[in-house]
Length: 313
Image 1 (cartoon, rainbow, N blue to C red):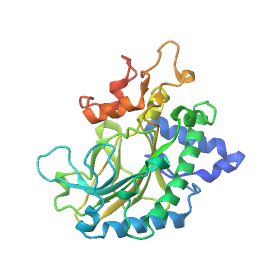
Image 2: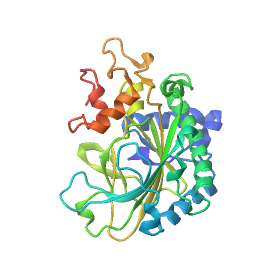
Image 3: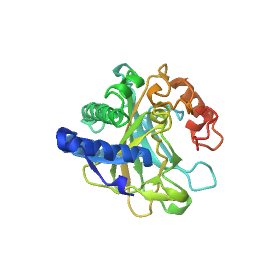
């Protein structure tokens, strides 16, 4: 899949290359909603420090990690673990820590690990850098659609952000489970840093393609709110995580999403007069409530918000 080759964002600083970079991103967004970026402006040293604090935390004892356990509900924070090899659905094989980072008023530091000692400072610096990257990507994506650079940022309103540290230990029977089952993200845009191969993106003919692990690259995937705002022109990416029997894989996922009371709707400039809007107007809280209730009958959640329209598949 050519669009999974890294896109060099440094070209955006060169007028001779900027249009080519935007075209590459547009192609990736239209084809599968997934792409990778290098020379993205986030210091490699900061990326390495985040991986280091993640490894140190997951190396703690079970009891030490459970001191930061959260409630097992959607939108919860803190440490959690789920390892499923029986007939239970959905399948999971991972442990994780999820933290709200924006707005600052929603940072619940009682869930932030105190070990290692540098955890909090590192996460705060890293997520600030990822906020900047997310907003720069939103500007490029807006321009690729013929919209003003600030369109998507404004359409999403006050930025909300959370980060998830994920650890996928070796699994004795990897054919019986998944690290994470297939899904698309409900947010606006997701930026992932991975240690080791294991992320797969949906490909043609109901197949899956492994996303290669490029050094110092970020994986970017569009999520459901971008699909709605672009009126289905850009698709949210269906993906999953697989596991293996001989090594641990870790990933660090940063989500950028709207406030719960933000109204989301297709950009008027992207609505075809003959076809009309593909998706209805909604408040983001409605989307989260539908996710919690699983009111999407086996389809991608975003499809449950579609107007009866043949363009939706």
